[in-house]
Image 1 (cartoon, one colour):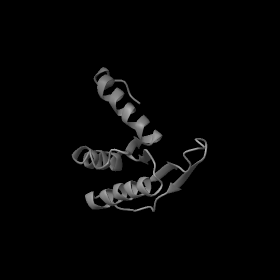
Image 2 (cartoon, one colour):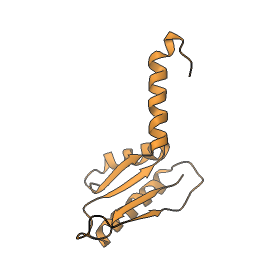
Image 3 (cartoon, rainbow, N blue to C red):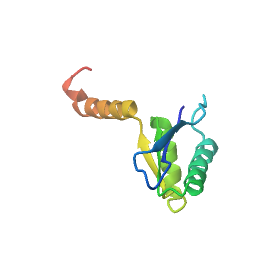
Length: 107
């Protein structure tokens, strides 16, 4: 699993931003690991005095992060969560297949 951290560096220059890749962890998304990354995102927003921070994740990690954010919405209100593009397309594909699969359409 890989996390992408994107944050704005300067308040004055909206164009300038920095993208960092968080360390890759080759395990299923555990609650403690996901909470650690969310806490790290909070510390980045505080240290850089940002209004918000974007977190991109795959489907499994997204689901775990969303659960944590829903439970602690006041703590992680500056974290904006996105599912990666590939995983978003796969979810849509599965929805279409579930809806029209009974018509014997094959993908």
